[in-house]
Length: 217
Image 1 (cartoon, rainbow, N blue to C red):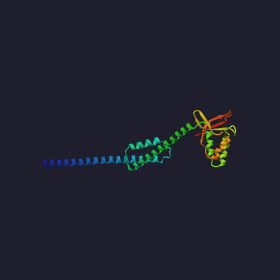
Image 2: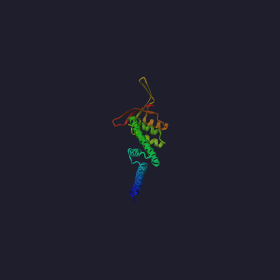
Image 3: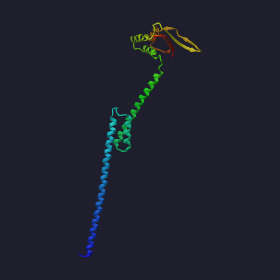
Image 4: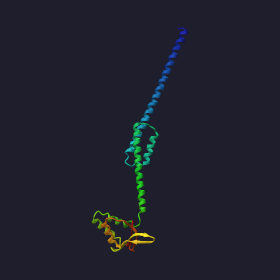
């Protein structure tokens, strides 16, 4: 073989090896890219499954999970921006559950606050007034009479005077015709209505009522 032919053969072999190297390198890059894509897809799928499981756990919770924990988990999942249709649906459901729970808690807090305010507004003689209302609204005569018997235990006797203020003007107080507690309680029973309020009460040394002053509402 001449030197010229040998050089040609060597050059062709070089080109062949060079082409093979390029093909191998290209194939290797494609394989690495594919592996990276597959790894990313698996990681994404794992995140989606984990998010769905956590969201479903919030939805299935029977009230043992604190509201703050629900919100923390939800915010962590939303921050991942998974943009998965099923995850998005579950997120909406969890947001709705949290909103309802907040509304329920607020309602309870408002009710407690209102109850406290009502207790502040209750006058010291409300328990006396309650008997009049119970007698007026009794379902039958037997119930009304039983309430009258209970109410009379608060008084020093059946003949304790009941004074009813009908007007107050210029320092002058006008009263309705005087009556007794026994007569007034039975009057409320018969009329089935009580339209007065406690104005003043006098007690004896035993804590029993000796005089009751009412005022028209």
